Length: 264
Image (cartoon, rainbow, N blue to C red):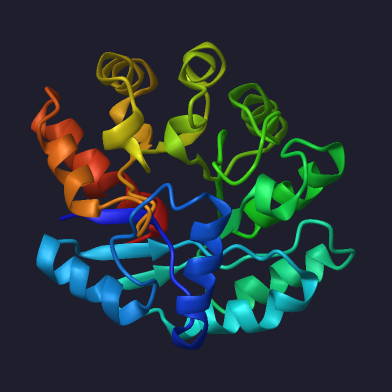
């Protein structure tokens, strides 16, 4: 079984325009694997043998709260699980989290760059803590993003600050804990109570460092992910199938860990 824990979609009516805007913002650095419509993602899943994709929407304005979360709920089925989102700077964050919970969504996606906030800001810690207390999984973009110049608004050290301030729950740092910050992942995050997703791995992760992080952090805290459509999920699957790790570790990464924290 394969669960892709980090994918992106838009409503059909917005997908073409949204994808073009995102590609323009990064000078067409990536070649999308699909057009960001649900039907296209499902077609790729069927072709590549992916059982479940987890969609990660990003809310960049408070006004998007209701529409984005209702759409997220509407696309969920036996093969698609969508997280929800909140606007981090909203004064109604507690009610917003309760609303996401009422829709039955399993988590929240945060993107410090697109949402323009420092990930471990003191005012955000109660937000994370409350969301975790409601059983939501928190997934964060971590590290480099080609649309934004450094210094970046998240880092492995900042994620360590967050997890140590929380009382439990499931936190996921994308891009193996911090895109292009993997030395600091080893320094600050390995061994902490945090999941690392593997999105954008095949083209960027130093192979020996990736293997070291899996070994030292533990395969039970690694989640297979692609960041589709920005990365081709088939290439990511092939990359992880070829890694010299045990079949038990591979199964945990491909689906076992995701099934556990998603309650499947």
